[in-house]
Image 1 (cartoon, helix red, strand yellow):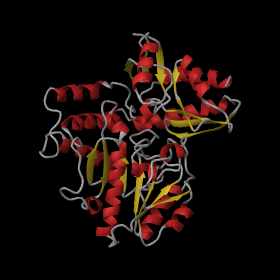
Image 2 (tube, one colour):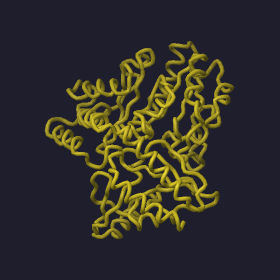
Image 3 (cartoon, helix red, strand yellow):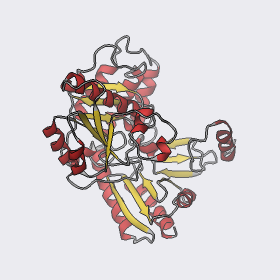
Image 4 (tube, helix red, strand yellow):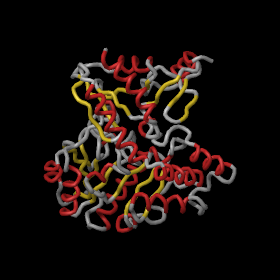
Length: 399
């Protein structure tokens, strides 16, 4: 079958809940992918940062293959020999005392929200049902009803009511707005350190550290959604480390699965995590032995290849070379590490530019109309980055 045949099948049998670039990926390795006709592309989306270690990293594939011959699923009704070593590694890597494994990123978000609400009743003495969580406008925390109840994007929330109560929305980047929104019923402040889906919106310097101070003074939890920004994507292990703003709960996912399978978790210290007791939260697949083996290998790759340092250096280069090109119609180039965005003039439709990039062998995706995100796997080589930048600049010159 040809690419056009696969696209026709997708259009016939899949609900139209995405508007993908018209390319079919049938093979992948490192930072490159190929279509059924053998055309080669640079992947500059990385499955929304789920492929930080590159496609089919040999170390992660080997761990998955080995585990597939042993045992893949036990459920949490029993112990298995992979979950403990995996979570020990995750806690050591993140610097927290405990982890609670789930599957998808939004499950980590749900887990964090449940932890905060339960903590508010059991540790702060609030009345159950009164708990409030302060969140930021422009956020993207997933697609469940709870997550879209926090959203300010009509595409995410329209016609899904009634919405989950208890959320107070304030402008992203305004610590003063957070301070004013906290009251006696507030249990947590929950934000992305950098808003990815909103177009790689980087908050003002000092915002994260000020949130840490505000939450500590008010006696509420600080929670960061590092699902897209975590695991070296921004040039640090986690984006909060730029300001030393250690959260009380951190949501993790995407690259934790190494591009092999969905794996997510929250990490926190015991003073927060002990609100969960047997039967109060769970997941059939969370912490399964296959996920444990893959997650452990995924973290090992991040460490041994120092992908945080690589992302930092290549991100600086990416933004500098695009800025030096002095491209027309581009208003802002922003980001940290290898999570970057090009913002065109207001009203500009970036989708045709994404199609032009595809024709040049670069796969990237627009967001919010006039923004294109560029986020290649962190294993991209210097030579590959040079070739990709040449292609990207040539297309953006004629946008």
